Length: 193
Image (tube, rainbow, N blue to C red):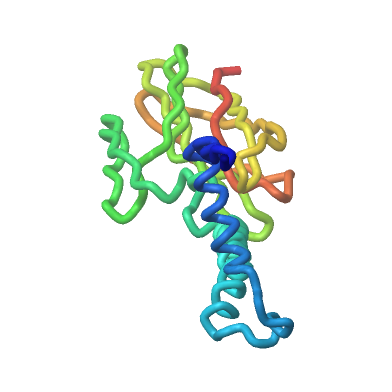
């Protein structure tokens, strides 16, 4: 009497997938002793593709990350259009060619308008206007502002003094930039002396 054949155990879907992948990589068992040199072009192309495709994908990802292709950097605050602010009663209206002011109003009725770094001058200067929204004259006002580099990192702060700001009027100011790497300026506070 012949012994009964025992059926092989059923393979899971994971084992079947692994076997198919190994067969894809290895191919059929070679019967030719010179199987490495007698490969068909399709077999050579398959092995080259398995090596080259991941290398190309990795290279493309590194290139995209190093060249900032998708613009993940911070946005320059001076690139977007600013909103219009109505002019004060005694001020000349702004021309449409100039940007709308960047304002910082204080509880004391003073505000700083259109502050920016003028790079076209040597040395660069911070320019802006102090506007008095009250009906009293301010003899002297102190403006302090933060300076930041092009990445937005705070470099320091500076102050400047503005003299003789009349009621409902504005006075322009200019202050030399003492921090060489400063790209952006933001008002910290403005108050009368």
